[in-house]
Length: 408
Image 1 (tube, rainbow, N blue to C red):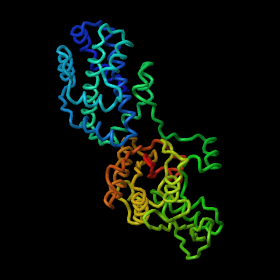
Image 2 (image 1 turned 90 degrees about the vertical axis):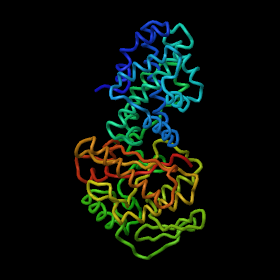
Image 3 (image 1 turned 90 degrees about the horizontal axis):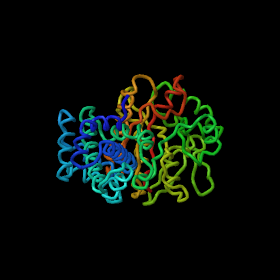
């Protein structure tokens, strides 16, 4: 299967001689310059996938780009524009300004030096052409495949390895560091995570199953069975005995169900599972020694969907309300909602379902009073499993929704 860069280079290839003649450069230098330019632009967009506001602006440029039925026609028009030094499209200029903190002319000069172009301005012209073609190519993808922001981000991030491998030395400083994706840990790493759970919040079974109190052992087993047979994310504990004991730090704990009281800024108090997503999220937000990163995710443990759909079931409301309360208590915090599925069925269908579910959770939070610009939703489909997909309990664990703090 062709990569994005392969497709872009293939589209530009018929126009190389025309561009070279107009710029007074050799075909070989123009080809090299375009390859470097495409890699720079696409790598820059990939880096923006972890910045919700910036990626929204990029998506707007992509989504509003006028695209011909035949991209080859667009290529010829854009190539003709190089002759008079005109920007290939207005959107290209805006995209380059979004991607690089350094002026695009500076990036173009470096590309020109790498490619062996004779004229300093030629690199900038090629970079502008590349940005315009990337917008046209992605615009056609977005329309043709009905992609939303999350789907476009998925498409791009899936090729980050190939894109950054194609980026010539000397351009990394303009692009920034390669973003780190959530990695499925190997068996040895999973053992380490279990031994030191405060280091990485890797997705695990129901929060209740990890509570230390022996009194809930039977309830945890029953919960796991119920979870596996429902095909959703873990339900809330079915045991709720009003027995409390004082814990260190002044918290009040329900010993039977493992509930604790958490006081939030603004005078709000939540009664939540000690090891649930709410407690973990609050602890992460309040711990200044734990910076925002790309790998710390918190899995919902009492959130369910109707089988095969993005319809959130009523019993999920309590946990969603708790998350809303946390976000209202910490108004500077932004989060990303991640959707995941098992590997049953087609990968494309799973990806779309995970995106719909992530969008549904985000919308539920927004409808409760959280500003849209504080959230982002992305479906990962069957990527990043946390359990063995060859068993039903494992598949049940892999069907999940998670949160990641992207700004404290």
